[in-house]
Length: 285
Image 1 (cartoon, helix red, strand yellow):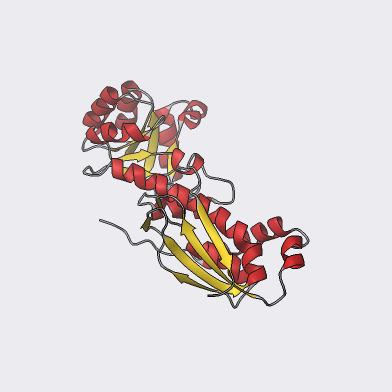
Image 2: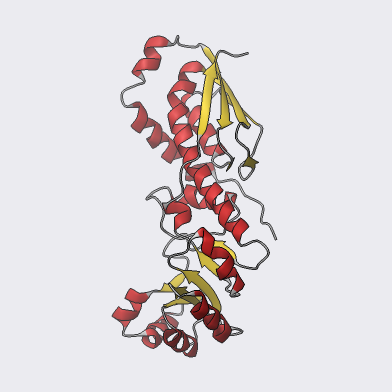
């Protein structure tokens, strides 16, 4: 079932946009202020220069609005839409100086988020016909997580933990420091945190220990497909299986065929190439 893409609360990105504009402007846009008359009207066309899934329109609009509250954006596409190369995504009207000064900030954000959404759509497409759910990770750009995880949703993916406080994932370092899987799970139960408890395993032997200790979700890390299929078989009816480690696009069909429930893909946010977009500004037509 497709979940509607809910827009982000402006409070989550308003300050981020303000800081991004300040970073780019410094003491002021010397070129624009020297060549463009104050109050001169402008008209901009946001174009997709390659096939992509668009994301970040609200954030781009906020960049223009912060420099010119009278600016308006007319959208021809919405976040999550597939846009073939050449698509007119949106038109923006307002003061020419503001459009010129906000252009790079708006494009930087949209190119980054659209890149994540586009790559995510490829992964989701590779898993089509199966029940495998594509998850992101916490491998996000510091301070940009809320936007990057939104872009994953725009691409049809599903968010994993947003932060360390909204999910239990006992990984190898926790296990080593706690003295083993059984002890780590015992301590977690004593903590009485009302969350699904997920445990990372790297072998079938570790899987059996985690299942015996009552883990309800297993993170199968860096397993080959044959081992993964056996892990899914052993966990059936006892725990969900999430696949992680070395996940590439070409591996998704094989992972889906094992019957695994989830696959977490760090590449969605740490390696997505920026999408090529342009913003052409002219006098109003």
